[in-house]
Image 1 (spheres, rainbow, N blue to C red):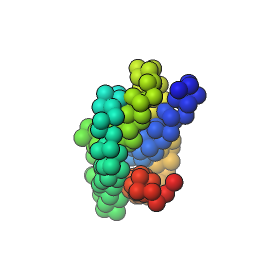
Image 2: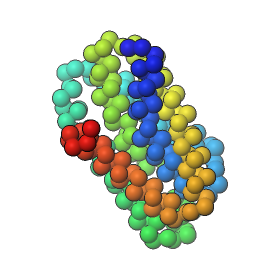
Image 3: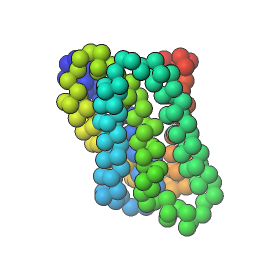
Image 4: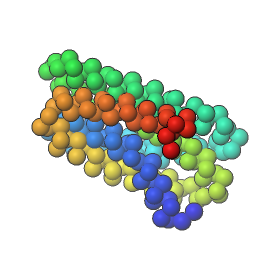
Amino acid sequence: MGTLELVLIAVGLSMDAFAVAVCKGLNMKKIDYKQAIIIALFFGGFQGLMPLIGWILGKQFESYITSIDHWIAFGLLAFIGVQMIIEAIKGDDEEKEQSSGIKIKELIALAIATSIDALAVGITFAFLQASIIPSISLIAIITFILSIVGVVIGNKFGAKYKSKAELAGGVVLVLIGLKILLEHLGILF
């Protein structure tokens, strides 16, 4: 596997994390780079960890993982997306202030949901005899960078539209989960 192929895989895998990072940026009243870095560390870390786990598991568990990964990703993204939609509809200022902080449990769920596909890629890496450390490092670094960019973009947009942006972010999360599900069910290609 060449470097260009690996970069394209890394960018492709990081797109879900980028979209979710945009949603997290929507919730920030003012850009907080410390929070942006924490978000990016979670997404980049999990995006690098999942292919390693997949690589370790190898071929013997491929059929089990690929048969349920889309359901797990859909469930987690839909759950968090619906929560964001409900918070946007409520419009409670006190709750808005609380949602601007980082919730570790939510970040872990989002990081897992956006990196489930990377688990299957890790299994593929095992079959292709890919050098795993450079591969997962590149995936983690690209996801980290794109996640920070996503938070900044989301914040610039969200500062103007607040509850509408949170509503849109929730809808985006649900749609990403639905897209993952439909692709794995063979309805979308």
